[in-house]
Length: 322
Ligand SMILES: C[S@@+](CC[C@H](N)C(=O)[O-])C[C@H]1O[C@@H](n2cnc3c(N)ncnc32)[C@H](O)[C@@H]1O
Picture 1 (cartoon, helix red, strand yellow):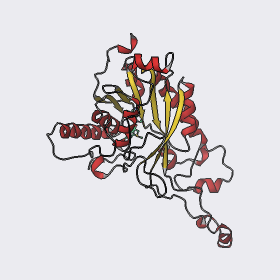
Picture 2 (cartoon, rainbow, N blue to C red; picture 1 turned 90 degrees about the vertical axis):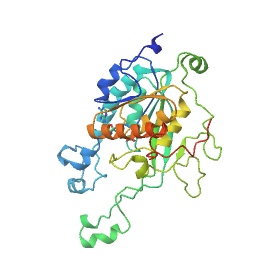
Picture 3 (cartoon, rainbow, N blue to C red; picture 1 turned 135 degrees about the horizontal axis):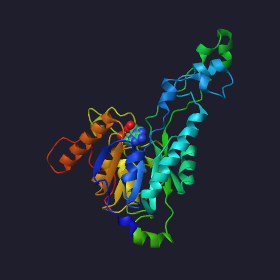
Picture 4 (tube, protein in one colour; picture 1 turned 135 degrees about the vertical axis):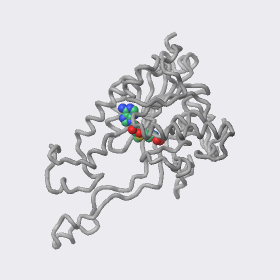
């Protein structure tokens, strides 16, 4: 059977290199879950903004002067869709039938990513929302763009940037072969594990909350990664909470499953898979982040083996044991 082919890349390792090349070394239909937080390639837009490349601008001055985070070239989204389409096709090849492909995304790019994934052959099953309260308001006053006499007309009006308090997670599935139950009994993937109860006994929901927010029931109480969870030297800008990843892994896979993160950054998915008794593969193109991931992973492995009293990842407190 094709899904049992040996890996060309030894598992339980993080590799330095381009995910699009490395994934070709992964055996066909051998991976139970792909869980990732891909790059969006928006940084360049903010840091090296070239207004000449924006074809749809209407008021040149206003666009040129907009603050970082407001600048948006629709071409950027289309490029991301095309690139993520290539990634998704490669993910499709290595996932078992019925296996899940979970992608963190951002509110203004999620439509492009979802279409890319669907066009590669996946079924879009759901959209999880990771809620958090640390988001900061980015809206800025427009006073500096207008003459003094125009300021009254703009009182209380700012750039359209409310506080960001959620990240969408696209829940896609490689189509199962035959009915879901038959597929699950053969390949071990495709259903959700409902013993994945959360603190307080809540059943899984598509709203994943990291902290208590007044008026909303505490569904998934995991703080954003603290300095100690990230590791002292971890300067990666988008570290995901390990416990959130543990929840997603536990919901979608069985013990011993193989979890791949092609854009593993500082190693959070590999650590979560390890802590959940799953196998993992991680790819990272940036030497600096690769080094951080290796260091974080080995310190968790040492801690779990009782060799190191220093903890860099908090123990799993908020998920109830199955
Ligand atoms: C959003 S970050 C992931 C952060 C990760 N979730 C964590 O908790 O640390 C995406 C990562 O993908 C890496 N990356 C970008 N292009 C890549 C490629 N072609 N192959 C492998 N990694 C890549 C970036 O260097 C970055 O660290």
